[in-house]
Image 1 (tube, rainbow, N blue to C red):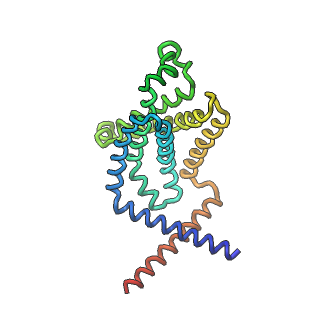
Image 2: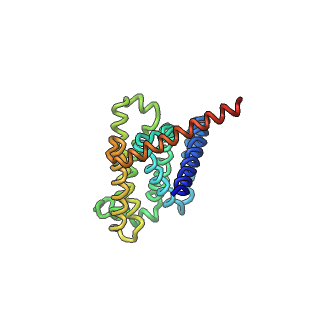
Length: 248
């Protein structure tokens, strides 16, 4: 039992060190990280020249969207300095996500061969005859566009904080559509029960985390969170004491 406790304490200390190192780096280079992400977002548009990577661009875009949405409630639950800092780069993450989604979505729509098979025959006759998973993806991208176009200070000033926040709630709809699109496209058929379960589980996990951020209603989780917070306070105190002794 003592060995397990010792190993757990060692693991916590290792996590604290990684957290503090990452936090220190981000705190020192926050502006450079934001600039690098914007440069990367613009460079991702070269993905139009690599049609074989369209699917991977879409998957990466969905992963970033998941990170963006989970970041806010997790930062409220754990109150970790690194998570708070990452909240400061959500706009850049959103821009990168939207650019990747553009390469993924427009890449397919502008491909004459793909469009003539999956979209062209139905778009002017029976739009809803298009495969539902493709409609889900198109809907997710259309909801992403207003977010991309207003992810700047000028749009925020023009719309005002209240209306800007209301507009950016479209991200929840984009998230739901993108998740169902993602899991359904993994199957050969347009509808996949296992994909539906996975998508529902991920959306349910987000709803749960949001509820937990609003009110921590699980006693065991509160105790665990308090325990880790106390251990981190002790770790921080040891680090300060050790640095003071070294300075002396």
